[in-house]
Image (cartoon, rainbow, N blue to C red; front, side, top):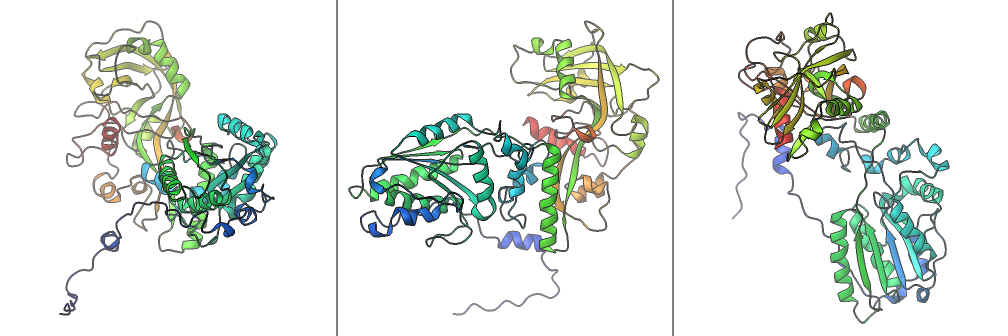
Length: 519
């Protein structure tokens, strides 16, 4: 019997579009590379060096050796195997954005790994780096292996990468040429279907190429694949196991090894990375023409008097904290800020601290510890005429904390001893922040609302309010964070504690992030 057609209820409110997309989205599928098809014997006439040569990029295409001359095949991956391609900086981007930037379908141009401007911005830029062979951006151990492969007369040396041929062929050829590396083939992912294979999935393309490669050079007895990604290593191992089983007796016995290379990641300079990501977003907005354009927003975890990395190290050493905690387990060194407030600072707070970027020198007046779990120092401005502000009862800098404790426990320290000597350090008023990329929220999103990923919470519970003066009541204490010091007080980090009694009893914005870091 036919299923009766259900008539929509006109009185029922429509389902939100975002929820509808979530409910109707197909479940994720695990990818498995296609099994080898055909054999060296059944399809031998279709596999020739001339046909295999069509996989090479036009810049690297050259005659290949005869089949009988090749006894070993060495295949090298490019990104983070041979070359230390830049990754999105985790000290700049909020977690979800860090992943989205690397997704193919998120931005119109394909994102981080499909935009040649990212790779071309490595170091001082392609024009500068080409003259110095991209020094410092290579995995030199793998470079030496490539040179040994080049010298082996019966070995076929191949560079195989999932980068798209149309966007990257010329740039990658410039990079390897500058290092003096000569490959028999440089194979990138083609922009159109090749030999009947789908080009959307990198593993699919690589396995299709490997099949034609091995069926062409049937006399090869050794195959080595150098790869950094664990997922690809396992997929190649599975595929090769199937291939060797199905071709047993039809070709020379093949000893195949997939060597996992430890990834050595590097990042672009922060200003360069922000510039290039902004270009990608601008291009996406122009192509998408949607109602809500994407833009870069900042998430401020806390505001404080921030120390840069050298100052942090000098302060910890002066107070002998590394020596004191040397025998302790799971201790995290901090000493990176004197907390102002565990959230973005309001105008009223900045009126007391001075503008972002203002320098303030502090002096240590006491050092204390609570149950060998939290170490902190009491501080004061060197210039008594300088006005400072903190949500805490007194300015304190948390020096170290055991992972089973929290920086807020520094408030339990009730005994302070004088420092071993006069210790002073400079700070700058700034924010510990990460950046994120989100859609414009419309006309109702102001500067304050844009600071929070959860806009409903920011508008309903965290609107700017009259600040506390740091004395009396329940105050949040001792924010902490990590990250490199940079513009506007630095990037990276996690928020602090405080004001659990405000805003309807809810903890402040940075509290959940601080907890997740120590979980």
